[in-house]
Each structure stands twice: as C-alpha cells, then as structure tokens.
Amino acid sequence: MRLLYAFLVLLPLSNGLSPHCPGRCSCDSAQLVQCYRLMEVPSGIPSTTKKLYISHSKIQHLQLSHFIRVLALEDFILLASGTESVESDTFKAMSTLKTLELWKNKLRRVPGALPASLEVLNLNDNSINVLHGSDFEGLKKLKILELKNNLISSLSPSTLSPLVSLQSLMLDSNNVESVAGPLTLPHLKHMSMENNKLYLIPDNFFNSLQSLQFLSFSGNFLTKMPTNLPKSLLSLKMERNQLKVVSFRDTKHLENLSHLYLSENLLSSIDGAQLLANLTTLELSQNRLQTLPLRLPARLQKLDCSNNLIQRVTAQDFQDLRDLKHLFLDNNIVSWFEAGALQRCSQLSNLALEQNLLLSIPLRLPGTLARLDLKGNAIADIAERELRDLKQLQVLNLRNNKISALDLKALEGLPRLRHLYLDGNPWNCTCSLLRAREVLKAKGTDVRGGQCAAPAEQQGESWMSSKKIMRQCEHHLRLTEKSKETKKKSKPEDPSSVRISLDDDYDDYEID
Ligand SMILES: *[C@@H]1O[C@H](CO)[C@@H](O)[C@H](O)[C@H]1NC(C)=O
Ligand SMILES: *[C@@H]1O[C@H](CO)[C@@H](O)[C@H](O)[C@H]1NC(C)=O
Ligand SMILES: *[C@@H]1O[C@H](CO)[C@@H](O)[C@H](O)[C@H]1NC(C)=O
Image (cartoon, rainbow, N blue to C red; front, top):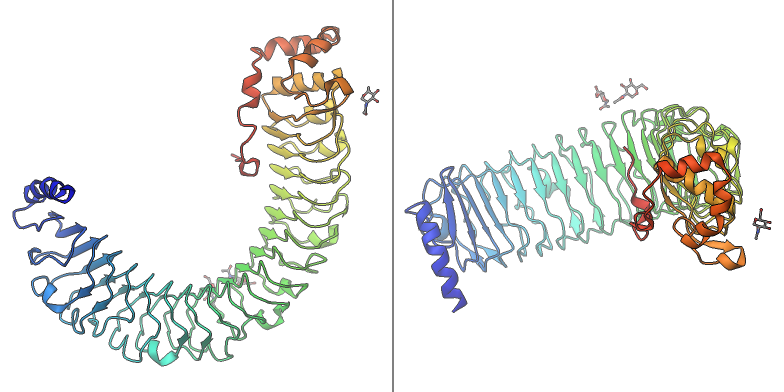
C-alpha cells in the first residue's frame, strides 16, 4: 500500500520533468539523472545523460546490458545500493567516463576493464580484499583513487604502476600489513594509509614519489620514522603509532615540511627538531616527554605538548619562537614556570596550562594573550602584577583551583575580558567578594562564579547570584560610594541571566 502510494507520488513528478525520465528518477536539463530506491538500473535513461546518480537502492549485480544506451556517461555514482558484483567489461565501452564512484556497497574486487578516460575512482566502504595486477591497467589518466575502509592486506608497487597520473591515493582503514617499494607514482601528492597494520616501511618505498606533499601513516604499528622521505613533503602524520625516539637528523632534507603530527606515540625524547626550518605546526600530545624538546624550530606557530610529563617551562625552551601563536602544555605536571619564559613569543594568543601543578599564575606572560587556561591547578590567589600586562585577554579560566578571594585591582586591569571561569574554588563569600561581583557585572564580563565554601552560613550559596548574601552585604555596599554607582549602571539585576549557560561545555568558548 505504502509502495503504491510512493509510486503514485513519484510518477507525476518524474514525468512532469521530462517525457523520457524513468520512474523514481529525476532528470534535469543538464543531462543529470538522479534515482533512489531502485531494484535495477532503469532501462529508460535518456541516451544523452552525462551524469547518473543512484543511491539507496538494491542493485546486487551491475551488468553491461544496463548501460547500452548511456555510453556517453561522464560520471556514474552508485552508492549505498548493496552492489556485490560488476560484470566484466561493463564500463569498458564508456570512452567518456571520468568519474566512477561505487562507494558503500559490497564489492569484493575492483571492477574489471575500466575505461582509459577515468580520472576519479572511488571504491570506499566496500569489501575488497585483494588488489590484482590487472585492476588498474591502462588507467593513465586516473588522478584520484580512493579505497578507504576495505579489507586490503597488502600493496604491491606493480599493481599501482600503471597509474602514471595519480595524484591522490587513499587507503585508510584497511588491513595493510606490508608494503613493498619503490612505489613509482611520479605525480602523487596525497597519500594516506591511516588505520592499517603497518609495522615497517621499506627504505626504498619513497624512491619514486618525488611529488609527494601530504603523507599520513597515523594509526599503524610503526616503531620508527620512515627513512628516505621525499623532499617535497609539506605535511607528515604519524599519530597513534609506537614511536619511541625521533631524531630529525634523518629528516633534515625536508626543507618544506610545515606540519608534523606525532601525537599518541611513546616518545620520551625529540632530537634535532630545529633542523626542520620551515615547520609551523608540531603536535606531540600524549607522549612521554619529561622536558620540552631541546631546540625547537624557529618558525613554529603551533606547539602541542599536552598530555606529557613535563615539569618545567623555562625561557630557554622558547627563546627563538617569535612566531608562536598557540601553545598547549595542559595535562602535564608543570610546577615550575620561569617568570617571563614566553616574553619572546610576541605573537602568542592562546596558552593552555590547565591540569598542571602550578601554585600561582606565571609572571610576565606576553601581553598578546587572548586566552589563558589555568583550570585545575593549585593556584591560591590572583595578584595584580600577574595579570596587569594582559590587555588583550578575553578568556581567563581559573576553574578548580584554590582561590578564596578576588583582588579587584587584578581584574580591573583586564579591559577586554569577556569570559571568566571561577567556579570550583573555595570562595570565602565576604562582602568584598560581593563588591568584586558588582564590578565584574558592570564590566559585562560573563562570569561563572561557583559556590561559597565559607563562611559557614553561606556554604553552597552561588555567590554571583545569591540574594541572601546580597541582602547581608547591602549595608556594606551602600557605604561604598563607588560600588553604589556601579550598581545603578549594572541594572536590571536578573539572577537567571547569570546562570544561563552554567552547564555549557566550557572548553568550547570562542574568541573573536
Ligand atoms: C619547496 O617549496 C618551494 C616553494 O614552494 C618550491 O619552489 C621548492 O621546489 C620546494 N622544494 C622541494 C624539494 O619540493
Ligand atoms: C624553507 O626554508 C628555506 C630556507 O630555510 C627557504 O629557502 C624555502 O623557501 C622555505 N620553503 C618554504 C615553503 O617556506
Ligand atoms: C574569610 O574572610 C574573612 C574576612 O577577611 C576572614 O576573617 C576569614 O578568616 C576568612 N575565612 C576563611 C575560611 O578563609
């Protein structure tokens, strides 16, 4: 019944668009035909069709006879249609076919006899377990080959060698355990083999990949950096492997390398990173570093050393990093932060120091900081001299520390402060804390205050919104001429507005 209804709805629609458009399809003037929920490739597709898109259908087998009328096809996309097999020679005669996408099906092998005109072949999300010697024969124009999320277990250079124009090869999420070299793909720019089972890359693997710029081996079992990496590399991803030591003496020829990702390995030391002269991003999160890398590349803009075992931050670590904008040192065991350690980093805007063992806010931080995260340390008070240079600061996170009182002067010196996180501290809710509250409200800063720990009668009260404390301090506040004025300006008082987003994910605040 439902089927019939759908049929009746679709019928006038498709016929209305074009007299020759098959059912469950829509045909437009640009020779594009799109079909859904088919049981087979329709026979009535106009012979002028250039692009045929079929999805969410049930077409177990593709055969030559389906396509006799549409030999001028340029793009054929068949996705999520349960296709298991393709008759050999099905695409052979389509001499204009440029894009063939058969993703999210159940194919067990690469379709045979593909036309030489093909430029894009996407077979992601199938069940292909072997690449055969003849699979890519004659595909001299193929630029993009995507085989992500299949079951391929090995890769031999001769299989891919016909692909003389190939620029992008994606083999992520297969079962590749071994690769042999040299891979001869002179125009290859992007290669990704993330989430496979590689434990070794042979020395000669890259010998004939002289155009390679983006390479990813993240999510494998590699214990060493590959050797003989191509000089042309711009980005190298080696996250989630088992690297223990990296010496950049072997990679100093990578003069253009700008992005290097080494997070989630077992690194306890990094040697010679300064040799990568053009590196701008270095990610070393979730390793076992006990110190910052000895000498860092001078052009670095982003350094992520979070989730390591770093104890000390010194000026020497950062003396040459004038371009550094983002520094992540959170989730370490930093207890000693040298005063002025980051003074030379005159571009620094984002400093993450949360979840460390700091007892106070580091002194002489760069005045360019827009965001400072000190959540989860052991900071007991805020002093004016620690914050007075931070004229650009917009976000200050002091959540979960040991602060009980606020120095008003320290906060008045932060003209651009928009978000202040103070909850999770043992607040002593005196009337002077309430004065600080009025000043912050007048400034328009969005404050998460948290609860009082003292005095006993205020315990558990939320000090940014409590009317009870307000009443008790009213007399006190009235005595202070200044705060009286501020109070007027900051009306209307509405406790609910303060609470608006108390439960938000506080890690995702934005900075203009
Ligand atoms: C490095 O980059 C420059 C500028 O883009 C380019 O001219 C040069 O050929 C590159 N070097 C290598 C080895 O690819
Ligand atoms: C990399 O650095 C070298 C000199 O150190 C320079 O000649 C080259 O142009 C740089 N490449 C890029 C892409 O910046
Ligand atoms: C809270 O502040 C008051 C006034 O400064 C002080 O007397 C008291 O000892 C403080 N309480 C705690 C628990 O620090």
